[in-house]
Image (cartoon, rainbow, N blue to C red; front, side, top):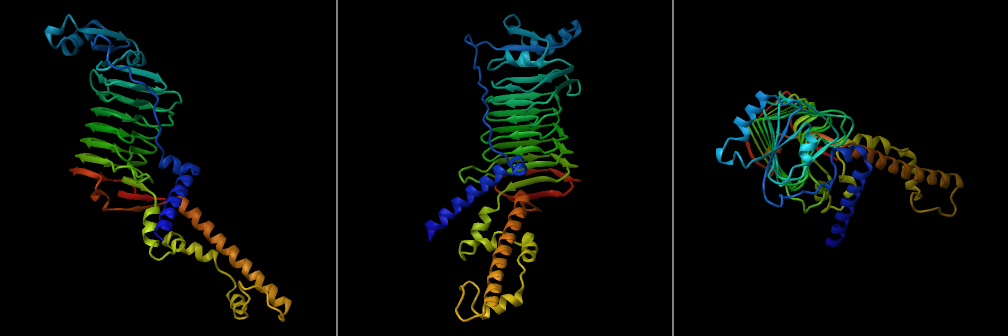
Length: 393
């Protein structure tokens, strides 16, 4: 019995995964991990670190300010520091090695396609985010791919257009974003399994999906930031496989507001709760879907009860024909049996279609779950469906 339930559980997990792969909506909402093929260069052979300056136009006054504020802050290193100048951001990123710093001077920079931060570098805007704007034009995938062990981004505004992936994806390693503005197109920031993301004093808005997507096994720390005018504020994904760890989420003094759906929503399959409820009684099919589908199933399973009772009394339903009875009665009973089978199948198909659509429900107890390490001083207001919710499929 125990082995049978175990095999049944494994089969249900495989069925859920197959449903996820076949359904484009669930494939987008839930998603699978994508491996990045970006390779880090590592440190330079001599071990030196270079500062890269990006400027479309470099004036004498701007150069003096850079020398005073950023390039020659320590007099002992003035003659030894190496500085390289670039007219565009992709060339500066392409020339980076482990430990380098990229300083982006004030201006509006346009990039076509994504760029990757594979090494531990610091990308810093020289000025406020409104002065340093990096805009992605043309259809492409991700705006910024992060795979470095320790990446820092600060004082930059990112503007995304016509993309099919998020504005920032952290595949692995640690990425810190401070004092930035993220104007999204599809989704915002995606934190993959085993990655760590820190966002401080930043503004994220405009995502047609979630502002921040958090995968199992990741770490996400949000502080003093705003997430607003997105489809969902923060979306937490729960995989089907049991070996994934819970994400670790810390939120402090954030404002999550004016999102179309929930401020924070958890996406998870219904399979495990269904199995727990149905295993002792052995009636898995009857308990898998409840109030959301009961009315539709009842309507689909109605048959001619009087005819069914008459046939049952005659012992015809499911028992085959008996000699000595009129052919008309026997034929009617066979028709009723076929109707019962057809209506039952139709009801099951309706249940399946409704379950594939997913069920979204409010969940005020969401923030009490173990995955939330620290929740202090946050504000959730003016979100379309409420502050917290759960998406079951």
